[in-house]
Length: 202
Image 1: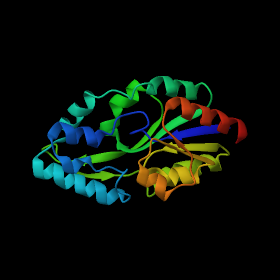
Image 2: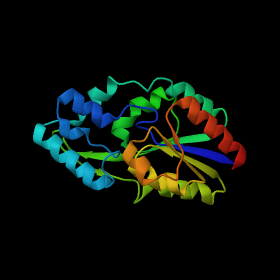
Image 3: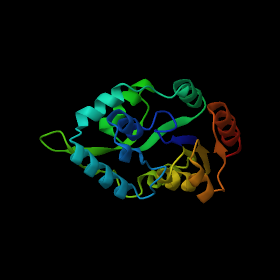
Image 4: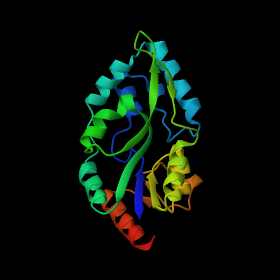
């Protein structure tokens, strides 16, 4: 049995924080997991900026509601689900991801939760468990699944490294330089071909 574990942002959806940065004009929010390997450091940094500028969860959700999936993402995901079990494993949050989950056809999506105060300001977050993406792959492997892990950022490396087959999709050059052992794909057709081959050989 095979299962494909995907990151969400950059694979199926635009980068949420980048779009919040563009909407608000706050350039400091442009930094993502493609730039900063330490996820907790990145989130604390983001939360401090949101507090400084008075940006609420509801405002971020308005930005998200204006976004669509990346072109071709739904057709690609449906293609994968015709051939294999597939889930989305993201370091995004339930409060952010729900519109995209609907647009993807309500697949299983594993993500985190935000903490807010009475003013709807984001004050913290709760992750499922430490090193969550790697742990997801390990759990499926313990169930005798062969796992393909696909992502684009530093926070995907636990999943990609633990998977039986790890693949990059549209990663930044810095990630490629740091992890040259993994194949890089740029378009869905290219990724489809590599998934097809991997499903046949795992």
